[in-house]
Image (cartoon, rainbow, N blue to C red; front, top):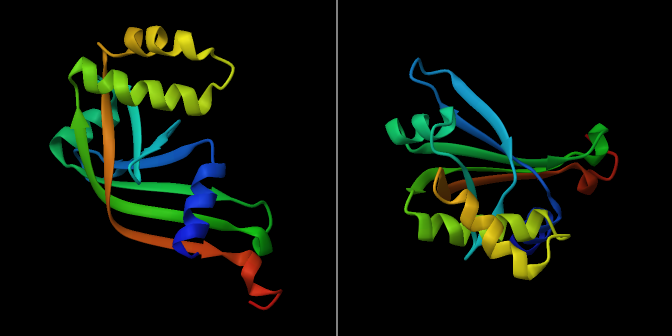
Length: 145
């Protein structure tokens, strides 16, 4: 995918699959809502979650956005990078507000700050700093594999 196609594809996605590394070296996978801020994937989650404990120990992270139900329609982006963790409530509030606005368009804008603020004290925001991006788009194969 071109850079523009990647931006369009990411904008269409609702969920982000996130992989961190458990203490024993096995992957820990979870699915989250996310936002894009200044070109970086961002999400927030409970500070006590396994993914945050893993990232505190080892900041390497992989993210996957994908769609398609049959082979000739499969598309996706895998982002490998480093996680920047932010636990101060003001920063978490900023990112949480964006995630909520992107994924809950029914929440009135005047209520977003209140909702995000209530989430900010027990959560950590994660900014994914991409180091390698791999993409695929089987719709471009024209039926030849």
